[in-house]
Image (cartoon, rainbow, N blue to C red):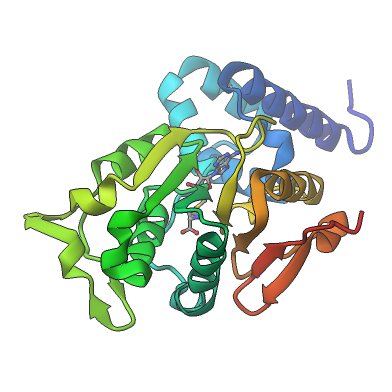
Length: 281
Ligand SMILES: C[S@@+](CC[C@H](N)C(=O)[O-])C[C@H]1O[C@@H](n2cnc3c(N)ncnc32)[C@H](O)[C@@H]1O
C-alpha cells in the first residue's frame, strides 16, 4: 500500500518524538528542553556513525546496544571547556565584579561567598573562578570562606573534574598560574584551589535547585535549550541569587522575556548581569 504524501516524514517525526520520550523515560534526560534543531543534529551525528538514515532504525540500534546510549548522551551534552575561557570575561570579573562583591560583603559584615558554575563540564570553569577569588583576595583569602559549586549532567565530566588533573596548566592575563598546580607528568590542581570547589551531579532541567549564591556562572549551556526552558532557568537563577548577586552568561547568550526586568546588565559585552533588588515583574 502506498504511503500518503508526507507519510515518511510523518513517521520519522513520530519516531523522533518517541525517541525523545524514550531518552527521558530510560535516562531521565529531558531532551524536550533542548532546541529541536540541536537534538536532531546531535542524534544525526550518531546515526551517520552507524550508517542509518531514519530514527526508526536508530531506535532499534539503541534498543540493542547500551553502549550506544552512552555515546548518544555524551553527544547531546557537549562538554568543551577550558581554563579562563573568554579571558576578557574573567578580566571583567577580576577588575570590577569580584572587588564590588567583596566590598559589599565587607559592608554587611559577611565573610562567606558562594558561587555556582552551572554546566561546569570537566571543571576548568569552577577552578578558574576559585583561582580568580584567590588572585583578588590575595593573602586575605584565609579569613574568607569561598565555596564554588560545579554542577553538570555528565557524570564522566564530573569524574574528571573531581580528579583536577589536566594536560595543560591554566594561564590568565598572559601568565601561567604555576602557583596553583603541582606537576607530575600532568598538571594537578593544588589542594588550596581544589578544596574551594565541590562538584555535584545536577540536571538543569530537573526543576530542583538550591539557593543563596552570590555569583552564578552559566556559560555556553543555555544555547542548547529551547527559549522557554532558557527563560525558566533565568527565573530560577534569579531566585537562587542573594541580594545584589551576579549572573554571568556565555558570549552568545542573553536575557530573555521577563528575565530582562530581573537583572541589570552591568557589562553587556561580557554578559554580566546583576540581580535587581525589586524585579520589575
Ligand atoms: C559547552 S559545555 C560548557 C562548559 C563551561 N560552562 C564553559 O563555558 O566552558 C556545556 C555543558 O553543559 C552541560 N549540560 C548540558 N545539558 C545539561 C543539563 N540538562 N543539565 C546540566 N548540565 C548540562 C554539558 O554536559 C556540558 O558539560
